[in-house]
Amino acid sequence: MVLYNDRVFSFERAASIEHIIDANPSEDNVKELVKWNRRNRQAQEELVSYNTHSRFLFVHPLTKDYQTANEYILLKQNQPNKFFDEVSNAKKYIERYKSLLKNKKYKDQEEYVKFSGHLANYEHKLEMMQTVLNA
Image (tube, rainbow, N blue to C red; front, top):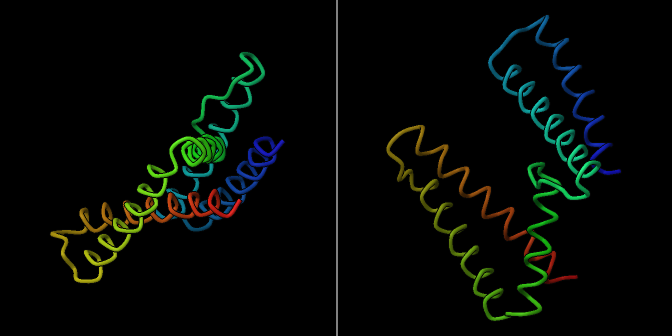
């Protein structure tokens, strides 16, 4: 049900952006339209796969997060030391990338974007692990 709702939301969001693009075509608007269309398509692929094969593809962000959370739960239950090492490593990487960005230790804009992406990924990973810890 969540995937279906996300698919509807993604479609509506993309449709509203199309109207904005008609009035004001900009690169940012087009990128956002592509993002929402892609998310809509991923939700459709997940729903079709589940309907035909009774399993998910884990390509949509919601199903990826669900799969990752389950992996963390199993890791916490079966190998708690390894799980806590993962938490510690994520915190260290977050501090590392924050430092690299803060002290401007990147060569160009491309590397800045790469570092920012890594930082966002590790922050998301840490957030998921903390959710597992608190559950």
